[in-house]
Length: 136
Image (cartoon, rainbow, N blue to C red; front, top):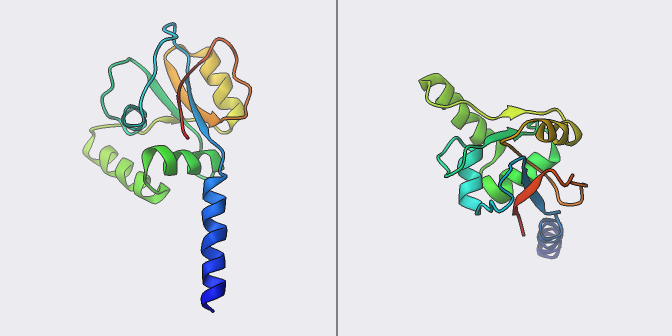
């Protein structure tokens, strides 16, 4: 039984390590903007950052969002939903807008200056958009 449990743990670790990277991209005229993980987390959780940017998220069931929440936000979807419910109830903050898919998010970013979203690293990103953060 211990062998199987050990094997299962190794499989899970290999899946986590091979998970694809996430890029955070922005439609901004300042191509030199680079954010760190904490600034990206603040942007998507309603915190303060030194730039005027608007976060756009993917739907909660989207696999890219699950990876983003794990690698950048550091919370599960249920914890994030609980946080936003509390913020709405107290009237302090609003959750980011959501795009229904990666392609619609990319289209929204291209058409709205100051918008920021996240995509899997392999997606083609137009020159108009700037990568401001990449997970490892």
